[in-house]
Length: 257
Image (cartoon, rainbow, N blue to C red):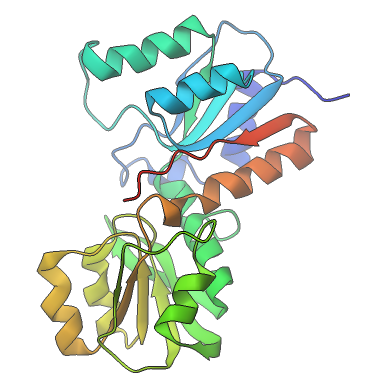
């Protein structure tokens, strides 16, 4: 028989496995319990990358009592309860779903994070912190266990075989070192080049850094913001299932971006 857990107990658990408080000054996201339920115990947790209306509706249809996401509904400023924001909150309240969001702490975490997962998929040996962002290093870098071509590296980090947004073969054919930052880390490509990486893996590319990377002979994989950030929520999902023996499900709502 599976367990049922309160939202407050899950909040305490997430705060023990993720450094949520440590990013209070660096992260505009309201990390933690963004919307509570009525106090009922939760029998199933649904995991998704984004707190959009489709994810919330699919969580309700699956019988989820909590939706755990990487991108929540609150980003450092108050929002009026109108339009899509109202619709999303109304759906959460109508279905008594608690919403839990973890942004940068889930990118950074050395065990459960998006970037740790990408480093492992690529075979980075002894990954070291990389990518200064608001005073914190949120990515990882290091030597690769075996050299990879750009295509091989892209396949290694592909989620469900989906193609990357873009491949930028600006450097050597064989990559021996790599730096990673999931999601919107295009500007940190400059840091990767300065620190001597052969390859930089992130979610999105930027026009502003295109020629910087080209002239530095830095290979880049833009794997997609969504596709590079499925890994952390899935690792937390596995951790919850093991800790609480609770029903869990990952909802895939790709944007193609």
